[in-house]
Length: 186
Image (tube, rainbow, N blue to C red; front, side, top):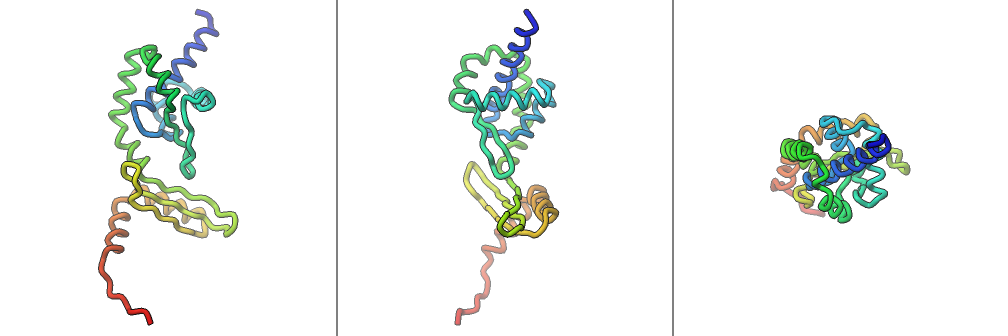
């Protein structure tokens, strides 16, 4: 097999590996989650991964969706069909490794998908808007938008939300459902 043929074979195998991962995870994966998988399994280098992802989006095998400040990839119908036809071209040992990876990381990926915290600069007000959310099975449990004056505050809110979401969610919900004495309107 010539070097060009080996290179082409590796490119195809890389694409199939990514399709297999995203299909088995059954959740849209962020670029960083895919990078972690590739790095842990030593499947390809970072630049090859970026090129492969772009090529797969261009070829309509993956769909790229912008989720606030995060890019997520999901398999398209064409990608699923391609995987169905060529799944056996992925070596069994790699399929087993991917299945184990999905089993070991599914809950973490699902939690990352269900808890979001991002921020952006509002060019009109020159303030940072922080968007925090909690989702379950694609249903919104809570979404909060907060305006702050500095990037540091925005980062702190994002970090606190992601680190303590259960406690914060419960506190907010408890405060909202507590019966309060209300002054009658004049």
